[in-house]
Image (cartoon, rainbow, N blue to C red; front, side, top):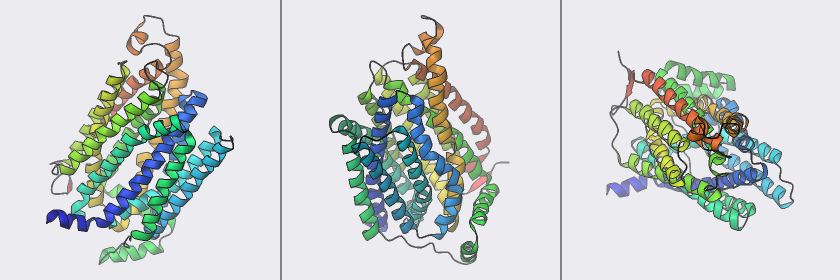
Length: 445
């Protein structure tokens, strides 16, 4: 009976979650295939990383303003328009490819436009998920969203590599457009997203919100973060984590693709292992009870992920060990994400979530394009030349090997040291906070 009630209460969530996840899979396949295509053309870690830089730069620069609009606008219309515009960008890539006119500059520009659309769509989607989900199911649905993200991570490199190898980039893009169509029509015809409702003082706040201009709305979101130091410190911690993680993502293709025992298939398998790990972690976090201290869980899980994965990749040469490193690095990420999600959703009033989430996105994610850029730049301009000039039999080559890809291994070691330092440093600050089963944050005296 409880299962039946849960299914009934989450019916709208299941519909929206499943179709949006399908569309996410198609988009991820295209992104992976474009990465393979560009690395084949250029052989440059930096030029490949610039794809992600262009996607994230508009997002982090304008996200703080997007939340102000998201709180005012109809969430369903925002999601529909943003998805449709992003699909038009994908069609543009397809047309350029068919006319043999696709160049890296085109890809950077279209990725920037996609990032701009995601800037508006993401806070609207986050609030929509809150509106269609009863509060008692927040941890469960957060785990389910991590579960679908894990499936996407597992399947997209496998499917994209297979389609890319046997049918080319065009086949991957056609698959992406088909999944978009299914998600778009389902949201348009079968999903109703309720308007934000508020009572008492919250209603008065909502009325004032409609009279605020964009900058006042931004100030409201920033003021909320200023008055809630736990949320702000968590955001800054995750910003530092994202810098290390995005630099890792920029380095990984340059680490695996040029190796004799690497290549496209091995890269796809390694990324699928990361997805398998997050899948297992997502299932676990869905079933686990609430921890006594969510804050401690957040920084300890990241300490394990950022240190072990990077060091294992830096000093090993076998694909099986690379896959094990991916599993260790990603297994605990859903645990961190679910606990962070519960803290945010139960702390921030729903009528303010768009504005606060947008400010969160700017602070927490601005380090992602920076990490991608510096990760690719340091591999191309510093680490690879340094290893190429290293003395045969010397310490650097003993630690990181030789040939193309050895510089990326050295960069993995640097990222492991940086990630460990970030987690230990912020851990000292966050150890003064607790947020546990009572769902109340407090500063320890």
